[in-house]
Amino acid sequence: MTTTDRPTAMPPRTARFGLQRLPLPSEGAIRKLAYASLVTQSGIIVTGGAVRLTDSGLGCPDWPHCIEGSLTATPEMGLHGTIEFGNRLLTFVLGAVALAMLLAVIRTFTSARPRRDLLVPSVFLLAVIPAQAFVGGITVWTDLNPWVVMFHFLVSAVLVGVATVLVRRAQRPLGALPPRVGNAWLERLGLLTLVATAVAVYLGTVVTGSGPHAGDPDAKRTGLDVAVVTQIHADAVLILMGLTLGLYFAARAAGSPGRSAQAALVLFVVELGQGLIGVVQYRLELPELLVGLHMVGAALMIMAAVDAWYATRWNTPTTPDRTPTPRP
Image (cartoon, rainbow, N blue to C red):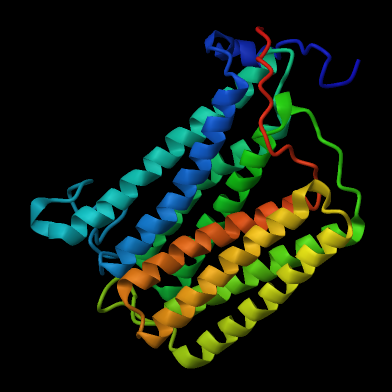
C-alpha cells in the first residue's frame, strides 16, 4: 500500500474547526476552483491595466477608504472613481475564490485521498492577496509612484504563476504524484527559460513605468529614456525566444518527456504574439487598446512559461482522471 492509498485519520485540529461538516469536494470541483484561481488572478492584471489606461489610478484618492469619510466611490467622483473602486472590489472576489480553494483542500484531509500537494500553493494565494491589496494602498498613498506600481504588478505576476502550478497539480488523478521527467539538463533549461521570462516581464514594467500611461495625468514617471529601456526590453525578449526554441528542440531530442516540447511550443507562440503587439504599439505611439492587449499577453506568457518549466519536471497528465472521489 502506497502513501497516497493509505487512509488518513482526520486531524484533530480539522475536526475542532468543524470542517468535516463541509461536503467533500470532488476532483472535478477542485479542478474548477484551481481554474477559477488562475482566471481571477489573471483577470485582476487586466482590470488593473484598465485602471491605468483610463487615468483612473487616483479615482479613489485614499485607501482603504475611497475618499475621506466614504469607503465607496461617490457619484461626484465620476467614471474614474467607479473604475478604481470596481478594481478594488475584485480583490474580494480573489479572496473568496482562494478561501474556497483552501477550504476544499483542507476538507480532503478528512478523506482517504488528502490533497496535500495543493496545500502550499492554496495557502500562498490566500495569504498574499491581502498583502497585495496593501501594496495597492501604498501605490495610492505615494500618488502612483512608478516603482511601487511596478512592484504591484509583479506581485500579481507571481500569483498568476503560483495559480498555474495549482492548476497543473489539481489535474493529477486523485493527487497521485506522477513520475519525474528525469532529464536534468532539460529541467535546467526550463528553469532558465522561466528566469528569462521573469526578466523580460520586469523590463516590460520598467518600459510602462517610463511611458505615458501613468494612471493619472500628474503621476510621476521613472525618468528613464523610453527608447533605451524599450530596446533593452526587446533584447531580453529576443533572448527569451531563443531559449524557448532551444527548450523546444531539446525536448524533441529527448523524446518530449512530460509534454515539454508541446509546452515550449505554446510558450514560443505566445512570445511571438507578444512581440508583434509590442512592436506595433511602439510604432503607433502606445495606443491604449494595444497596451491593454499587451498586458493580457503578459499574463498569458507568465502562465505559458511556468507551464513549460513545470512540464520539464513532471509527467503531468494531459487529460483529467474521471475516477470518482471516495466518500469520507
